[in-house]
Length: 308
Image (tube, rainbow, N blue to C red; front, side, top):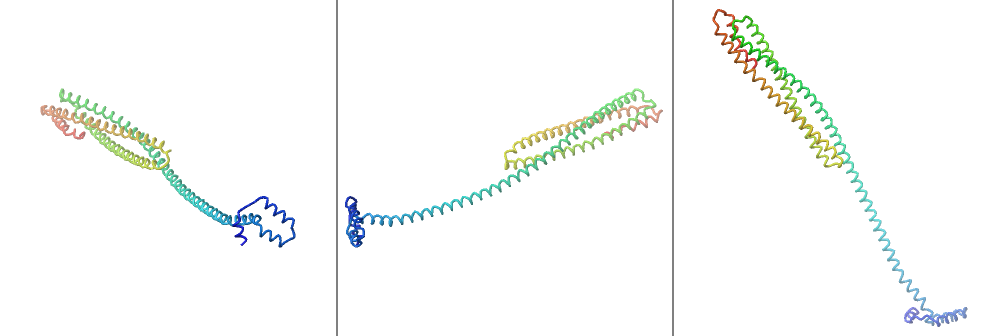
């Protein structure tokens, strides 16, 4: 009933409230009277009822705020935990990528070392081949000089036989020419064997160059997957390619030059054979008084086959 009365009475705070408080202070000991004054006075009970209603109304808001704060704390803790787990996963994936990149870079370094060693070996082989080619050129020059001398001697002998067929030293000279022709044939055979061996070495060098090129292509493919610092190594590989291409071109040019020189060597020897045959026919036209000379001069037409 009091709460209803207090709720129905309008709020008034002023001089009457002060007077009631003064009267309560003066009365002091009158409990029943003071109780009646408190119960009868409408102005004095208004602020107390207002305070209790405010306290009762503020409690659910505090609980709601506490619940919201707890939910916010839980959500923030969950988000922080999720972010921590995500960061840990990203760190693990980055570590795996770093390990893979380091392994690939180590493999690229090993392959580059192998390429450098093969390039050094190829350079050494190229220097050895150049020395061999120089020696072969020198031998070729000597052989050309000897063939020229032999052609001159054959021409001189043919002239001597045509001028004076009864010379006594013609068999000896023919025997010497036969021996020289045999030595020339053996030397030419040895020269052919050396040319074949050099050709095989050139083919081996070409195969080595192809293998190096394949390795370089593989290195280029690996370098695209690794760090950008491999660009300098690719430049070095391109320089090695150019060196190898120059070496291949020089090898092919030298082999072609040797083949042309061999063909030039074989031509004058094949043309010099008919002169001996003509000399033999001229000698066979001599009277049968000197039978020894005719028998010895009939042999040379079959001997130039050694040069062939």
